[in-house]
Length: 481
Image (cartoon, rainbow, N blue to C red; front, top):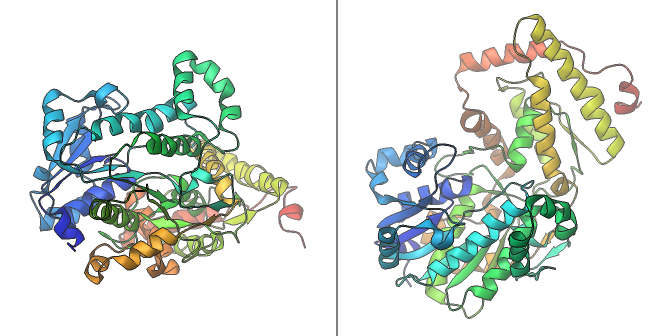
């Protein structure tokens, strides 16, 4: 049987979502380890930037720094496809359509709206309608050998057990799509909470709809579904700790690492189910190979989580975030990092408003006295919004079936395991979380790692730490006894 590298060698891949956190990692790995012919990336104009400008910005990412040394001309293998996935025919030009039909062997559909607070219309358009358009187009690709759809492990999050199979939604995807045509945005939002229940947000709801639609409309396409849980920084590749966004757990790490947040609502003894982004990319690429080789008669589903195979708890975050950030503070710190979790709603609210918010108001007042722009209350509001989005996941834990992914790991060769490691059992969480924090400082926050910069941040941290740690009326409740 051909190795994963042999399979991809000389073949072309069509990748959507290449500008996203996971998509970037998949693109970098394909270029660095797979000797692909071309990677076609679908990029739409956004925020006043053309598709070409966004492609150039993408390839300037620090993530590609290793490639710039080992393969200086790698950018010539990244072919821009200008389009809009939610448009009929994905908005492709005739020339691009013809090129893709004649050259693409593997499709990796990573494009999605991962905003948990997305309006229902926008979430359905990006996560469901765009998939339908991609399936229609994939059926016209003459060389297609595999199609990997990126979903989420939380499609069944309203139940404690999540099997590796398609979960039937309470609403037919086509009926929901029809609702978009027949209702105004206001009417849709008025019904949204009732429609998505018992799913906690539009993201998990629409990803569940998308899986059902995929099963119904895939026809004879060679498809598999990859379901990662909460995606965190890279564990190893192309370097440890790479992360370039503030989504999910990363945002909470920043909020607590700066001292802006001192309390998270949830249970620290519950499993966090974090998976490194590079492990996800390796698994996706490996699944592209196996889907082509095995040609399963069923639609294979792979839950990719850590909780069953190598669990890490939120308590580990509570320990390692201050361990790192109190030694190497963020430049935006407001004192020492002292994160904790609360399962009591009243205590949590008293922490975030009676302690943290009051402190931010006080510090903003000091900034005004010094003639500086007050910013800390605004940052606290943003941090609270981020932790609120994650609250459902810090307050619950799931039993994810992981037989398929465990069997798949055992199936691949030792050579492929070395090059495309996605065995979650090999992650050493203490080491990983330290590198995660380091990556937040260097890559997400774009801060200098020089000793002089860290010393300046320590001075800021010490100066803020001299302010009162709490305010009248909170101590007796927050620190009983």
